[in-house]
Image (cartoon, rainbow, N blue to C red):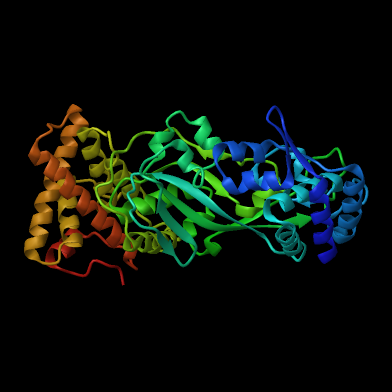
Length: 441
């Protein structure tokens, strides 16, 4: 590979990078655009055409054909890579020709230096996966200092002020340029998840006119956080964050930060977005304990979901009750449904108000006085929920606002208890009233 590094150094002296209508740049100039990383520089790096003299390109193709023989289809002379799946781009670029791959390597050498680019390629040949970070732009989270989990999950805050160009080290260029409200990103929190994807290189087996046959296997956070292994990971992740943080947490944009891999594929990278609804300012600062609690709750939730005992309805309805902009009436309806799912067995619906308050008080209270207070709170909450259901309106008074807050706190506590309990409660009202154990043995 040392010969390959020297060859690339020679090629870079003669290579030019053309950007219409801005001009043509040397490899050194091209690298400075990459290092500077502002919006204009990123545009040039993303759109430049790599112009390698034919004779030098032929020498590189010959050298790479020997190094990458195990990954080249001898009939089509195409190499299988997972870059198009990881970063986005034209489907036919999933399996570039050896000549196209050679030009991409020259581009990477210009951006990263020949030795570094060759080392990355050597790692892929040896079976090393792609390393990247999935990034999620959150709403409803305030985070004044960087946080991290050993599994490979991080939270940090974007700059709190400045110009959109100040966001370029943190957000994709395409996201900043395509969003008229880029100023809304300032002060938002970004959650990052370590990821790997393989195979980095493979030998295509299909005919040239057939669909590319790559199948990129991705693993996030080392496979140690259950919610990241499901198709609904975006929702599940923000749900456990909401419970741990005691605020409504949502996401608005998701993208992959591929780091140095970006040099090997001419694409600025895409992002996934959802309609943005302002959720108000977070009342508390996200701390390490919240992130660790979210991880632990996810493990507990996953274990209970496997046996069908996770309080999913209660979780979703409690979160709905915390959304900014939701009416007071809707919040009480959501809380009533959440408490019913927690404390009212499907087989019995008589005297619902009394049963819900009794079971909830026993489950939540540590002594008689605390249970009495929970009993009163849950009865009042159920009554307000009934008013909301039957009249479509709940008076917005200091008393009802306090009841809403206290009920949300009680519901969150109940969800946390249920996720941590090893046994499913059995709700026999006589046994509960007499103080019998509340779990099946």
